[in-house]
Figure (cartoon, chains in turn purple, cyan):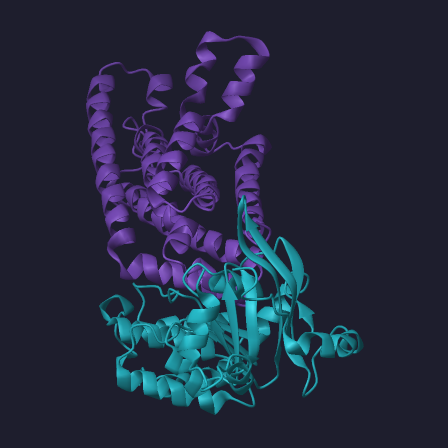
Length: 269
Length: 274
């Protein structure tokens, strides 16, 4: 564990002493900010339109959580799709390219510890990303008014339990994506190839349910289950089921496990 | 070509066979072979990198590893450090098989690869600390251990500089410092003097000499004067095969010509040329 933490610390120090992490997080918050403003603008215009309808069941859904935070968190998944390949690409591939892999393989540590250190660092990055994104609901909560536009009730303008569920969902999406990226990175010496392959795999996982519309029955269910947005959506709505947790856990266990095997394989060939 | 150089087994090889069995698993005691290599072969598909290499290195001995580029020096060293697996044959360090008990071997070996394994984005201090942690240097001793190796390799002045900004000589020395961390019993150094200036080469020579006795060192180099100055024994390989393994005096005696003794360079040229 000590070794794994040493590796995680080393990874994070490289991410945060070079521009990598800052550039990626800057880009992420900028794009998320654009999405956030768009959602806010939409909410504003909808509020004005609906004000004349006087229909309580419609206005029920016209709150900041459902109209601003929920779409924001769902869309941020797309940012993660572009961002995680860049963050994960160097994890193992860079060690091989710069020959430092030879150091890791000749000091008394296990491949498991190398993998664990790297994945912990990746998860820490995702935690920072989710923390930054948490600022958007916080802003809404600070400036928004509570209740619906019909009745300005007391309490928080944000349904924090739903928002937290969404943020946890985002963290799991990030963790799953990093798991894919880590594994792909352990298969190649080229960071560019690692990023590209990771991106393609993740994109396929992301748009798998586009095909589901044309299908019926089991095929449709399977495609739906396999695609990532389905499960992020469940979290963002604040109602994750066990299958959503299992889905992300599968990535987060399988990816590191395969990475460990890939590193161990170097001792054999 | 075949008649000129018979294939030598190491002289010590046959002698120590019985002791090898007695030692079995576990730590080698004083006087024993620290490194035992038996019939080591490494094939990369059709290419045979090393072929039936056998040799021993005694505890406290400094072995010079010679051969032309591509002769198989780096491959042998990589197998000894557990970075590469052998296709066949065995290698033991301190009685532990490098493939079966890699952690035990890695705990005892300091390795400087041909290209120093440096993280260019880190400072020398952060880098050495990271390696010391991985080598299991306890926290309380960390600082003194880092100071010790920094003094040995004289990198103390650049501790806070980022490695990417260091000259080749400094990078090489940081790589050496990394290998010395944790005071390992065995040092495997792949061309350690590349990029050092003459004065640094001299300091390095003194450093290696000071390690003799306590540490077992395998060092590969193309600078033959390096070998005569520091090593007790020389191993020469050609196209993956051991062609000589003897102490310097023995080599000179074996290859002397009627009227004069050959220099190491002449012997090397004679043995290592394809």
